[in-house]
Length: 343
Picture (cartoon, rainbow, N blue to C red):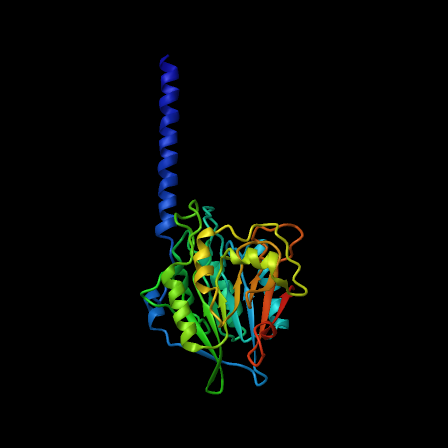
C-alpha cells in the first residue's frame, strides 16, 4: 500500500512539473519571444500615402504570394519554397508584390520554430529585386511569438516595404495604393486585414468588421476609379462566384475545400455588393486550386498555396498569381489578366 502511494505521489509530482514546464514554455512563446527592432508598430499610422506609376501602356503587374507557411526559413520545405520564389521572381516582371497572408506557420510550439528568421529570409529575397512589397495579414501570422502588429513592425525595417493603417479601424493593415498615369489617378489597390482567430489557434475564424468595410467604401467612393481589393480569407460570395460566375480560362478550380466557411464575412459581401468601383477581390487561405470567376461585375480570384510547408493535396503544386491590370480597359471583365506562375 505504501509503495503504491509512493508511486502515485511520484507520478503526480512528475505530471505537475511537466505541466509547469510546458506552461512556462507556452507563456514564453506567446508573449516574450519577439525580436528587438528599431521600429514601432505605431509608425504605420504616420506612413505617407502610397502612389505608384502604371506603365506607358496603362498596365500594372501585381505578383501575389500567399500561404507559404514558413517554419524557420531554413528547413528543407522552406528552402525549396525560397528557391522556387527566386525562380518565379527572376522570370516574372512585376510592379508590386503582395504577401497575402499566412506567410509563416501558425500555432507551432516546436523549439526550432523561428518565424522572424523566416520573415527575414523572405524579406531579404524580395528586397533584392528592389520592388515595392506589402503584407496582408493572415489568420496564422500572429498566433504565436507576437501579434500581426509585431510582424508588421518587423517588416517596417525594409526599404521597399509599404503599408498603412487608420487608428480608428479594426485590423493591423489597411491602406490604399493609388495607381497613377502622370498626375491622373487611374486605379486603386486596397490592402486589408481579414482577421485571425477569435481565440488564438483554437477559436473560430475572425471576420472583416463593419468599420473596416466602411473605411474601404469611403476610400473607394472618394477615388471613383476601379479598385482591386486584396485580403487573406475568402467571403461567402466566392462560393456564389464559383457556381454562378464565368470562370477565367486556365484557372481550373475545384470545390475540394469550402469557399464559404466564414459565414460572418457575408457582411462584407452585403455591404460591398452594389459598389460599382470594386473590380477585383483577391484572397488565399483555402489551400485548394486557384479559382477565378467573373461575377456581379467583378472578379473573385483565390490563389492556392505558394509554399511547400503549407498543407496541400498532392495534385496541387505551390505557385504564385500574377495579376495584370489594364487601366485603359473599357470594362471590368477586360481589365484583368491572370496567370498561375510556377517555378
